[in-house]
Image (tube, rainbow, N blue to C red; front, side):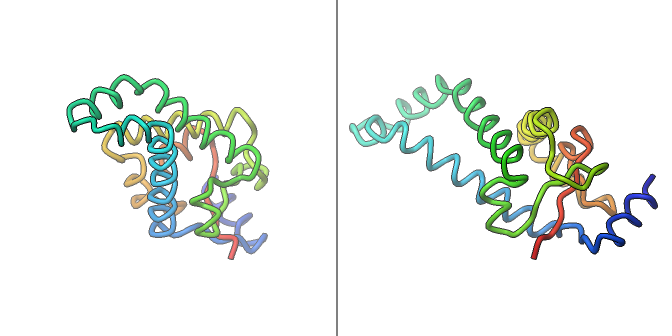
Length: 150
């Protein structure tokens, strides 16, 4: 199967996205999510709360944070084939069989696995260094690849 996918990518003139582009996209996406959380809690952060109160507020928001992250990645992947970070880096997520945008199920699987990868100290992202397709855990689970568009 590896040769088959490589042959199809070469035939379609599609190049696998570099690890550095993927890391930059990761950072951009996490920054965007952090900004959204900051906007949601702006009033509480600026109300003179000390660091302990801020940590308590954020720790009570863990489920909301999980849902925000999941929704952000699943929605953007399904509708656009890329998150805002990936769009900025000009990379795209493709179904490895059809070489087209991922389905809703694939998008949700990718999003859930990305969260688990983050919880495991980003090991899923580092996994991309060890294979020719630069596939992360979420790519393996959802059967997707990330490619350059520019």
